[in-house]
Length: 143
Image 1 (cartoon, rainbow, N blue to C red):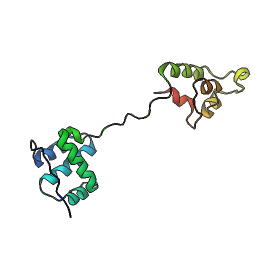
Image 2: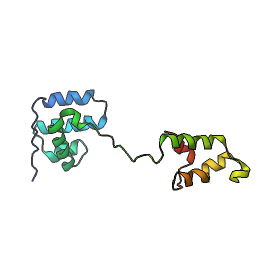
Image 3: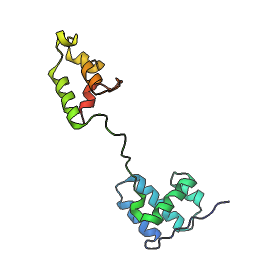
Image 4: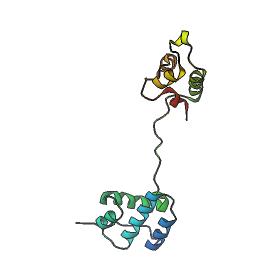
């Protein structure tokens, strides 16, 4: 059995939501606005979800977010991501090591390019307690 979703906000009509979807710069938000507009028009939850390319339960979740926060609640939220492993001063020091190049006597490596691509800088790995990974050390210096 297909339950209808209770849309508690009555400040905007289905037509207003469609207009907002046209103005939205975020495609995902526009799709969610269109789904809510269909629900306001009385279309079943499963049909509205299918027409907008989402699951019925997902539409229900977005309806709850719309009820709580309106149109802005339908925007995608950015995840903060993992905390950086290096502080800004550590990144600066690491960048200086990479850009200064290899010292054949000290590092046992002739070319800076080999050293950076292979992640063969022993000092930062030990000093900063970084696990060597497939990400080149030069990439860690950016951002």
